[in-house]
Image (tube, rainbow, N blue to C red; front, top):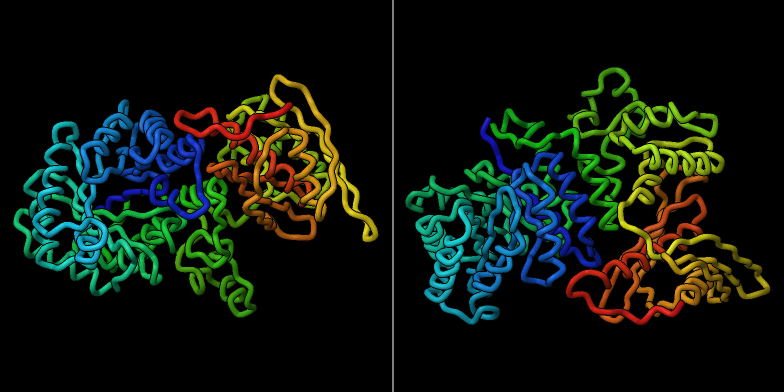
Length: 515
């Protein structure tokens, strides 16, 4: 089987999804999981974008050891220098440098002629070669670039010593036949093309990102670039899990496979979804909640007789389980610990005690605790970062004849507790007004979203909020069987993230806290 290399850009292109803003700790957490998944290359960010992004890329570079860590740069010396700084300490650093080549980009964005684009790209690669042994060069908007000029730029990159040349469908414009033909043309017309790996980077504007990536593989691409869950700019990128499972399931047709540990796909998908706040649609291929669900009586009958009648791959392959251990309020610590171990969580004694106490509290509210309940419980509360604010108590009153009111008590690290009471236009608004008074922060609620994590009337509610202070936006998440408590937890979580961002280098100071 021909190996297809996997270039993961969840931490860079994926983070460019509108509304997504990962902090350094979250980037490192995702990076560790991507390392477990077995991606070959990991694009950690765009260091020249901000001091915070540079610091985050450096943290990722120092955290992972078995993956090549990549920083993105425009064809500018300052950008390349920023990547050099960010990748200090990386076990296997790589520079990803790009320049647009299409007529529309040359005319309107770059205001450059062909020869100027060629010279700028060549100069950038030559400068980068002084500091990097591994360079990937990308022709931004290669799909809409003239075939002869595209081949000329690729030939230059080969001569100058790039080890990967990326041919992105930057705006998701092409269809599989067109995109595959580009790789075939380059293979047949560029001298010494075998000296480099050709890479496919597709966007999903017309819903063809995965199909285009597979077409590129059939026509000689050595690497695919994408993100977990297909997140990214606009309609997103190629979903890595979809390409990996298409190659695995149809190895007879493609004759190629990735080196991914496929059983880590589900866990990686869930982690990225939770930390970015981007929910995975139920009908999403491979990782959607309904991907291995069967409701039709005909389908169920077929499944009971022979699973392959309606399943072309097993849920176990990607990390899902068909059977589950049912946990409830009568379960003991031993059963609880064993279930967590089976799910891949090995907690320290103190963490286990905290998790077990919260599990018991949840079990009193729910008849049955599912794996999803446990994951939500763990992911919300077992973070490493210290909390600036902690919600100690919450109460509220509501009547159809009177305006709602809420009362909260919030403690701040090293500063004791403060209680505040407020009304508002609805119970959630009252809670948020009371929290604002208690902590003394001046913020604007930009977005509020709620969904059920699990099934049933006693399902866990998950709330996501987006807060803005001056020019800084943060997202917060809260989980509870009570949606109002989940709303308060999400708001406090966002305030903690705001406090954390103010401590980062290069961040803007928010409003002064009054306590």
